[in-house]
Image (tube, rainbow, N blue to C red; front, side, top):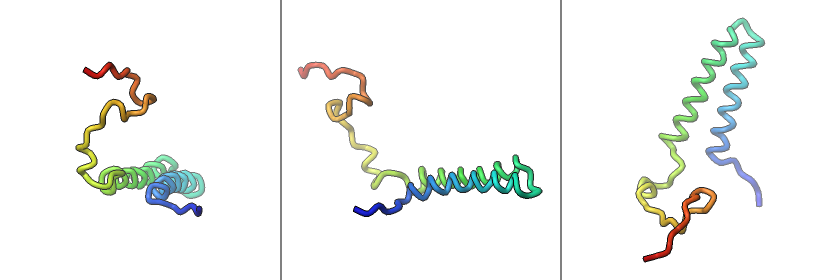
Length: 86
């Protein structure tokens, strides 16, 4: 099984690369460190915004309306005990 890069792998790489590039430019050039981090931080925020709102992690908006039964939720996420069925 060969590993392939997916969209969110590229988004995470882009966030790290933009902030790293901002730090590198801040240290290596006459551009102030704060300005470089803020400038490339805006690029990172744009990547995050695109990944969350434009190309979100759901296949269809109908996926958001499906209710999940309490029994289907893993106990790690739901500390509430399921009571007896009545």
